[in-house]
Image (cartoon, rainbow, N blue to C red):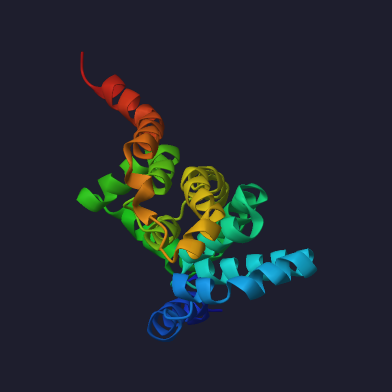
Amino acid sequence: MADSSTNPMRLVPLVAIAVAAAAGYVWLRPYLSFDTLAANRAALEDMVMTNYPMAVAGFLALYVGIVALSLPGATVATLAGGFLFGLFPGVVYNAGAATVGAVLIFLAARMGLGERLAARIDADHGALGRLKQGIDRNQWSVLFLMRLVPVVPFFVANVAAGLLAVPLHRYLVTTALGILPGALVYTSVGAGLGEVFDAGQRPDLGVIFQPHILLPLVGLCLLAALPMILRAFRRRPA
């Protein structure tokens, strides 16, 4: 019987995601945009007013699909969540859908390559193996930092964790909690889109880099890195 870890069928979900991401970038990017959201404002608001449960279900399914298939438009979807459902429960819908989509792509990466790749890296006695050991010793901190640092692309964090065979429960917890600050910021921006639409303007997506928002994020990053810092000092010779 063939080893299930070498079964090429394990790569199918990961390949499907890669194909969907490439196709989405080429064909769907114009539709999953702020302009599309603005053009369909009235229809979307009417859907929420007339059939709220269906609107929520459709929004969650679309958001999960965008994240799981690495399609363009995750930021626009977050804005839409705030615009359609308000800061609360919009932030819950946004964070929940993003977490589910992230877990799906994480499982695809881990099933396709992660377990074998992690085993090979663990067996490596060179720099790559030592790097993997360092990450394994600080998994909670590293995973939180990947979510909290605004410059780490969401897709990169999802795939990297899968390729390093991170335990699912750690990935789930750090993803669900780590994306909350960013989700809160962009959902808040989305909740104010009505005024932006009325003024014929575009939302300021650089708001996350403003000092009153960025500094608390930096503080959270330092807090997440604290266990690594303390561990490094304990390992230093007296």
